[in-house]
Length: 120
Length: 214
Image 1 (cartoon, helix red, strand yellow):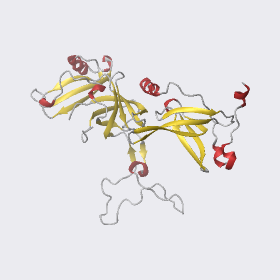
Image 2: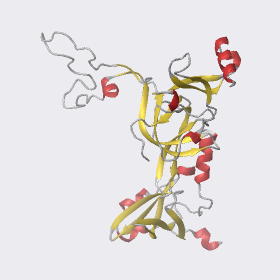
Image 3: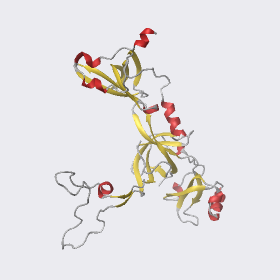
Image 4: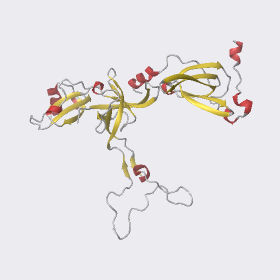
């Protein structure tokens, strides 16, 4: 890749990105503009996918809203993603948790909690 | 016509604007543009134009007449030469005009001229956007052009009938693209959307002909 394109992309990367993985439960604080006002909206759920690299990195968060599964894809370095708060770290054996989509009821949001964090 | 620049397509990326929306942009290197010759209506050329050169070229790679041409202008060897014409001598830019990204302002509309990527010999579906025929239900014809004419009237195939053939490698102008950023320190323009040509190909960036307001 051209050095200049690399530079343009590096400039836009966020300085600090919280360390989170697939399986973690997160709260994504997004900037929402309504008219001329800006407020923060929170989307909370499980990270089921992280893909891409550098400026193009994105992650998918899944939650169950009123019994209906909702997924949202966030570009990691977008200014609209204000902060990412990790509330729970999960232990999973897959890079993509698409199998959660076919689950129903209580199991739909079931991801084992990371034991390492507890023992450490 | 107003003054434009010659550039080299570097590739594409995205940038976030002030609202936080992502914009897909093409990065065009426009550093090293230089005025090689000024032609004036009043002079022996008989028309008003500015000849601009772009991209370094070793002297040993140039013909002797070209070496002399560049020497006269006091610039090093250039690979590409392009003239920008003006209606009259009065419309010509000032002699000390800066030929770089500064020539364009952010938010300005531009046209980009380039040679499209070659696609080789292509059928009518890709080349002309024909619909083709159904894939199944007993069809034995899938991507063919179908009928190319009538019967004894007119008794011939019309000229310019769209048929398979060589596709791509044609000069194309993409009109009304926005300059998202003009980065003087990098010598590049960030132009919204895609432009003709492959990475490394030469393009001409000029102010848009049909859209001037910001």
